[in-house]
Length: 198
Image (tube, rainbow, N blue to C red):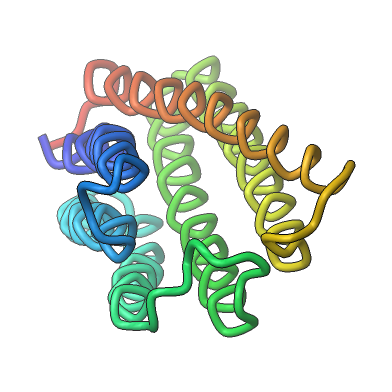
């Protein structure tokens, strides 16, 4: 059952992210609430890793990154309210980059740990799925980095192709990101069903 903490982390991040972003865009929530799901999800990852490290030591490697992501999200909450200002301030860009890096290590730990368990339990096809999910997630984070890089340079008064590119990449990131979260959640749910986790 401990792997379900990872499942709920993905589901929670997707649902909370959509709800809070929607409320924020409608002016019904403060900008700092955008970072709140990362705090909750990081705690769920940490608990999941703590419980799963007894089954596979690989999961222990994700705990420091879960803590780092939670701390960075708390820092983002208390930073001045400039997340909706373009170009992004340099310090917010750096903190956002660090969150993306911590998130990559968390997901690497999830995929690697599940892949190792699948291999140990003679499920080579499911091990391949874990590798495929990792690659898809990396692509999603590369897209996030592209959006972050463009938003660091585009100002609110910029017009033309750069603004169009930023908007297009933003839309692609949201749609692709939702697909990735669905794939990751179903992957973890399948791991819950297939793998013998004591």
